[in-house]
Image (cartoon, rainbow, N blue to C red):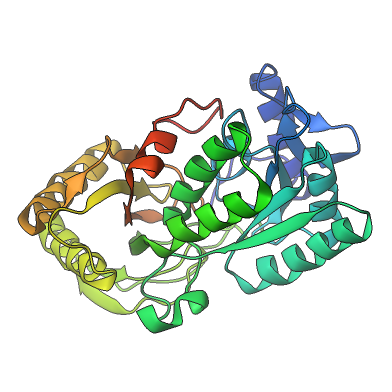
Amino acid sequence: MKKMLNKVEEAVDEMIDGFVKARPDHVKRWAGNPRVVVRANQKGPGKVGLVIGNGSGHEPIAVGWVGDGMLDANAVGDIFAAPPPELICDAIRAADTGAGVLLLISNHAGDVMNGEAGADLAREAGIEVETLWMYDDISSAPRDQLDRRRGGPGTTFIYKIVGARAEQGAGLQELKTLGESVRDATCTLAASLTPGVSPLTRLPMFTLPENEVFVGMGVHGEPGVASMPAGVADDIVAFMAGKILDDLPFRQGDAVLAMVNGMGGTTLMELLVIYRKFAECLGERGVELAADPLIGTYVTTQEMGGFSLSLCRVEPSMIALWNEPQGAPFFAM
């Protein structure tokens, strides 16, 4: 399989080079570690920093979401590999202005292990750190085992809402509590049509039977929970929307944020066809959109063909934060 890269072992660093050269008014490398990307203009003293460490290969999340009103720093790991604790600690140091740092951790084994270890290193260095585990994938565990769910595209709501409140100067504990509230009100379900190709091996990351769509696959190709015939988008979307709406559950009159995410190889035409049916399903349940939906390519696995649907039940204060301006270069609302 073809990839437009030079040496694969240099791809992550070259990606960062391109990013900071393309958006120098928004982001830069941190002087202390070239794998830490930070805002071009750091927050003022007394504001909590917001950080995440993650493996590369899922862009634009998370490196593309460094910017005013969202992330203060991103520890950029190798392709599909959680960054080591030392790198995460450096990102925490880069984001600290004296008010502490909230470290976001997507709920995957390597991310949790290295994230918590990185937070401990930062605490040993005298920085106040709280961690927030993020999870939203309803296919990976039942509702009564929330903390076993994987992190998925619905964590997007946390980045934006918590980032906006951090920009306003909220304290560390308030931000963690807010993030937990957003997380626990968010549900995501994904469907995969074709695999992504690993830059490391140049081979498909998994195989799918012809003419089938797998529902519930994770961002790394984790197993799905159901298969459906490919070809009729409305049937697949209606099935997935029903599962999401029943999970929280979402009820008539609930105000929600909605997201249709492309996994890297799904066209805007397809995403809009998908949203058309998703919106119809929400209307049938009496669930009301609190803002324009996010529709686009946000959380990817290279060129994987597929999409995810996410809903977050929101309160008026969350809606106001969602609508706050932000300056992340590759987060389009």
